[in-house]
Length: 260
Image 1 (cartoon, rainbow, N blue to C red):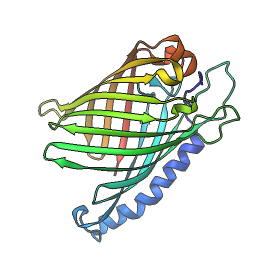
Image 2: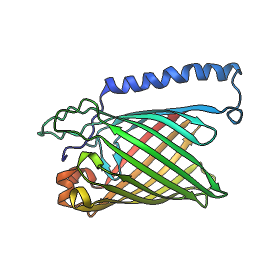
Image 3: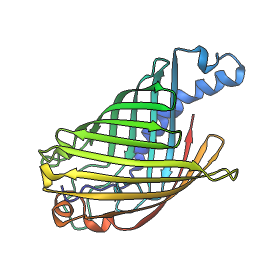
């Protein structure tokens, strides 16, 4: 799976965007007409958004051959904390000169629960099935992952993700992370920091660390982010079995998203 990377595919992105707009159009109209009850009074809420990224970087590694990506998401949330949704992104795992795997986008379905355990301590647990439609024979990257994140002291979080067969490699994967996000005074900007450790000893016999530093800014329903990412201990086993090391080097990326 050395060519696991991403490349934008307009057709898939248009389908995702159309799905989001089909849901949001009646929602927005109802809101403008004043016919919708407040969120606190409803049992169910629909949420989602669209994001454009200069480079889709996931756990320290570019998933788009360092090219732009378009992503869309929609989910249904219950006031009890349970939720379910669908997320998609344009991708390209095929580097120049390598065999085309037929994969042009990722589509994730997920179910989860998020809520307050006690004042100042929140838990988010989500089960995700990541699929790569159109994959040719011999390029089965689909996997299931269970992830839990604890948020505490307002600005901090720790998380652990586990997959019994990560990326279809035939072994378990564990991803640990710790980080925080803070407002920068009254400027409207925010600072985000995260350190991760990806344990791929079972399928690939190696592990690596990833680091993220980002500056964020919200403009109403829009969220902008400038991020720097890099990795360490990204050895030859991972480079051969997952992504080429050049996709895990120092990177700067920009993203702009709209949420509803």
